[in-house]
Image (cartoon, rainbow, N blue to C red):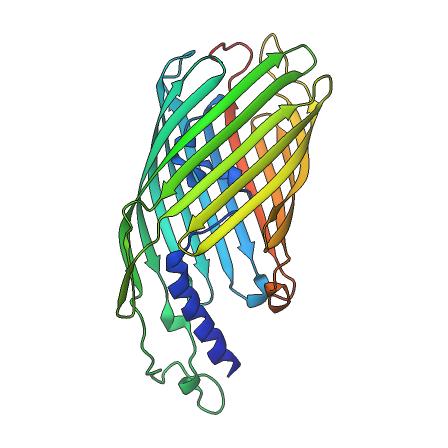
Length: 339
């Protein structure tokens, strides 16, 4: 009976997952999944990111989510309009049947510097997605022969379609304020970004059993900042993000405190700075998430863990979700004056 309930739960996941998207706790480290308008909006030449999340391991093969992205500005000159371009890929799988979603998308943005301090961009995302599951890997109650589960016995259960594909369209608006004052000892910078995006604009159809429904559109709002504490090596990095999709919603609020371990050189630009950030975020009514980031040169690695605070904590045996991101970014040094 226990196996049967697990199978039923997995099938429910396969249905309800059509109505909501994947999520990362380190959402700012998946910029193209947060807002297509953020594509190419950063102080650098190339940005590549890998994300991985493993959640609720007490369920066995529970939820495994991975993503990869790369983006860059094209034709960027000081205070001139230019283009951002990027591609991203993600895969989300759950359970023994590997019920999940795989999607790849191209993101393009138009970036308009309003003046030296303010930038506005608008982006679009065009993707191709596939839902897929291996229901043959599941075991059913009527396959039990008295000694164990016999996969040679027909389950006689209604099996939904194993896969379907669709085109996915999204768009976003992104604003950034940036003020940087360089000194020989530290960077006194202030940065604030605000974004609004709408995913699944075309409401692609989702099919399961004999039911066909349209995927809910998803609204995403985000705010993040970087504020150096004048006269010190400390910075404050606040974040906020909300996701609303159909009847589902998610709200995240967090903050990191960064300490600059080594300053960059201001004359040659040959050496970039290093730093460590510690902090936490809270996903309302769901999880408390401590996080640590370490930066050295062009590389950044961040690790976080979801400590479940919802009623599901006991059912998951108090297992949360471990997450890691790896980022490589070629920054613009002091010898460039584009920003």
